Image (cartoon, rainbow, N blue to C red; front, side, top):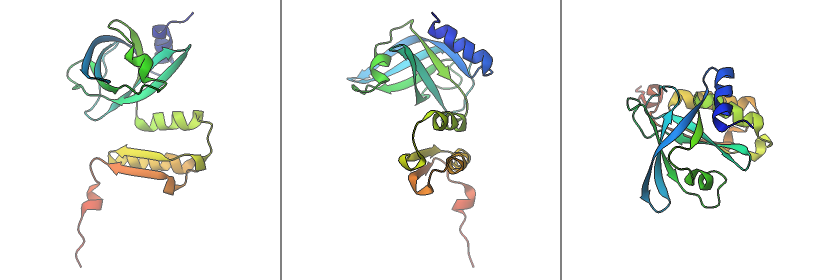
Length: 174
């Protein structure tokens, strides 16, 4: 039987370190159903503030993944994620049960890659999808292009830009 760590490392080799293993080093209980999990990645990760990582755990014999914003600084050397327990969810209840020393996978990469991955694996028609794009203008523009190419109507796309494009903020005087 392949362990979660082996699973992550095999994907890492195939995808140029896109998937890595990580060890849960600390759990911080913040309030009832709210916590922070600190993971030590098996290899150094480099990210910019505001980026996220997709966390994966084994549950019921399959790998379940969810994206999370990274709360820690890129200079700290660990990945800290804030977690809210969704009692009837598929991911957070098994995630909530992880203990210090347990393993998870972390998928690194660009938001556009993850968007393509989920669009390719979802068994839904474009009319059944509502997409939410939130982030920097370049990421939103790339995401919008990907969604258009697979036929998702633009009235099914919601957007929120973190930093508006300078071109959109210019005041035009006549």
